[in-house]
Length: 101
Image (cartoon, rainbow, N blue to C red):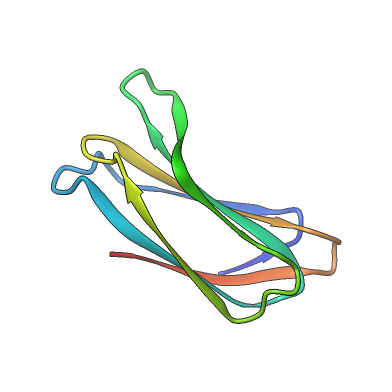
């Protein structure tokens, strides 16, 4: 995807994760001059959204074509939320793609 600086995108699983306790999330910054942060959270039984420990990945504005992978744990029985947030001036963008395995 592509996000203009100051924007964000949120991805939410369609239901609780039932068949695994963890997964690997790979984030690839393909280009753009914006910095960006990817945050992984879960929705708890009381409908609160809680960030997962170690579930943050940050790219600076000079990171180009860089790939980062995090192991996301503690997801069984919960919905997973992945938020991609772009920072910087109005003319900057954060070009990325995500792979969950």
